[in-house]
Image (cartoon, rainbow, N blue to C red; front, side, top):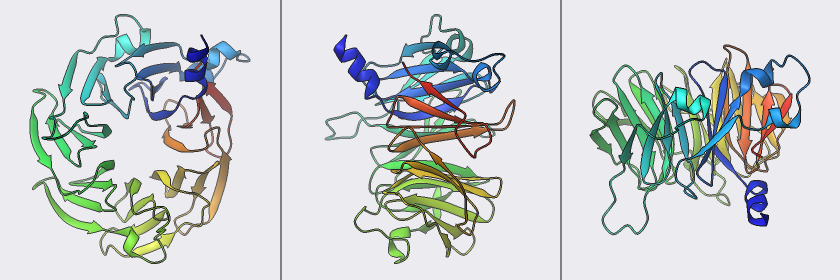
Length: 328
């Protein structure tokens, strides 16, 4: 009983996603457990919520004590990136908590000489191409065809493990422990450009390292941070546009949203800023380090912030915390 309470109290959330309908929040933790919250009843309550209603509607274990590193929503499946394998679950079973078993799995190839299975740190879906991209702890990005579940390509231009991926049109952008932000042309699977933020004196933080923990992009800019300060770069010219004046010891979340920047990491605050670095809001977080922040506008507006805590912060207007969910 004591061990169970300790695991609950010292839990960490590394990944979150919404169901396709937007009514459910899916959360993955370091103990291999998926927790499902009925988010619509929490954000739009008919009456005052009790403690039980702020805890998961149901839970299931993917692989016990193997952390859930990444989650991905497709129209038909919840895709889970754990350690060594990718799992797919049907949404109806995820929502009702009954007979929750993977409908398929994909094992990541083990590298020669490797003692441990590789972490699947990030997942992306390209619906148009029918592919999943998996950024992994073996320094590779795997391109996997969803229908056949076969490996199409292995992208290996990083020298250390992959932390983050994002897609922008025909480009995919990757960030890793090696300090590289690679811009891939998905038509050729070749690196067309790259950014190395740690080589900029005003961005570098040598005491924190060169790693890239998070990135985002739009047609004009690439946003990235990690050991280097959170910074905005011109997509076309790859020159630095802004360096953000926030108090952190490492960035794990960075997102361009409605011409604003959302960011969090090893900091007790989650930030919303303008492109020029003006701070719009500072949201105190339950976690000392934020590892995941996701948002949606439909069917209701919500921002969910999670990290090194069993608590998840819910913000309806992106300006302050409205509710706090708990894994237990």
